[in-house]
Image (cartoon, rainbow, N blue to C red; front, side, top):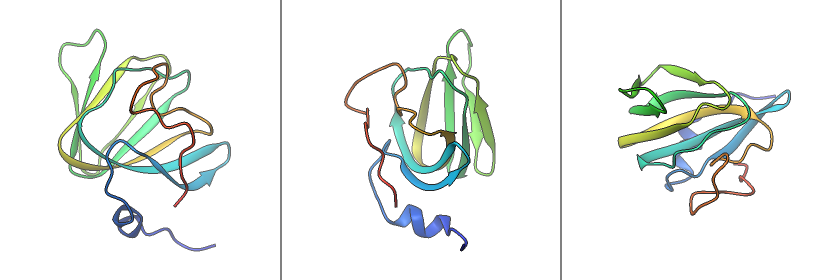
Length: 120
């Protein structure tokens, strides 16, 4: 067993909206991803958690007038079936915890969809 260095993990890739698995936690995976720009409106059948390690993130949620702002050092749990769209005006480093085999774009298939998330 050894510590996972998040700074080192984030330095291993430059692509946006492309999560990487860094650990397993019971029936969940811990993933890191870099966000920049707007993602896809989608929903999942399970809860997911975002922890902003660097930068900030706006989370647009269906039927809510204003986005939720998640700053560096803050986290949010997105309840299952909640339609949402993350947006990062500047580059953001995000840690994601969600059940194994969750498709990153949820109920939507498009150019952001990653069928097999790589492990780093």
